[in-house]
Amino acid sequence: MHIIHKIRKKKYVSYIILMLIAFIQIYPLFWLLTFSLKSNLEIFGANPMALPEKFMISNYTNVLVNGNLIQYLLNSSFVTVVTIIFSNILSAMAAYAIARMKWRFKGSMLTFFLLGLMIPMQAILLPLFLMMKKTGAYNTHMALILPYTAFAIPMAIFIFVGFFQTIPKEMEESAFMDGANLFQIFRRIMLPLIKPAIATVSIFTFLACWNELMFAITFISKEEVKTLTVGIMGMVGMYATRWGELGAGLVVATLPTVIIYIFMSNEVEKSFTTGAVKG
Image (cartoon, rainbow, N blue to C red; front, side, top):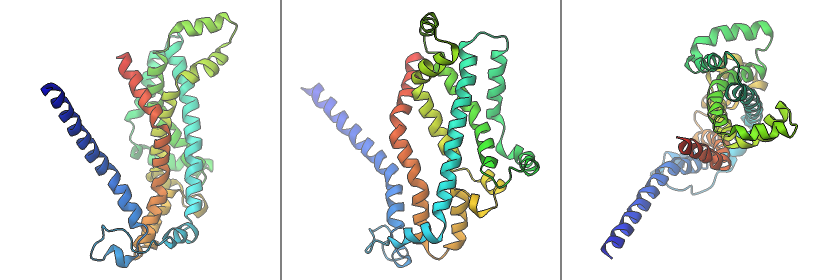
């Protein structure tokens, strides 16, 4: 009985600690949401942590309509989605060739790709800017999609290679015996098996693209092509005296990240579990 009592006690303590951690993680989001629904009077009032007395939905309509936030949101979504598609396809194909095929320089090629992880973005800012100007890509979506994809590929290849190496070779051999060619095996057998890796790469790429500011502010100056981070930065000047609107803009920028993680977190957990089992 004494042992059972000790186990239960430990379990309750664990629950309390986990609830405390969850509260610390979630409260900033909750505070940002309430902040975005207040007027300046409430934000700088006696109790800024309290719930809004009157929910200022107009903060959201102002930033979405007058602040051009919808256009920024669409631009960021387009750039991010295309980058995720490009980086997943190119990285998966390269990783498949490196992990599953026998050719002379595959080890050197993996090292070459992984060297990309060590290149700081600041080091290539000027060469990229000049290249964008000369090729006419400056002030277009491709000015962001191309460098974002290039920076996403090394980490994606690293993840995909690890997953491809866990798949038994007998599956490919059986498919070859049944008459499938290389592309059919890659598309119909390999890609479904590495779904957790695709989800992981997609989330990492999404976060990198969605929150990126340096390339976006350097390669884009046209209002119609600006992304959300540049738009939010512009709002700091536009709504410097209207903090509720500024909070509404931050909520709009944060919400897609939370939604994406909620829908894809299971696949990411599977990817970590796969690596743990293999080790």
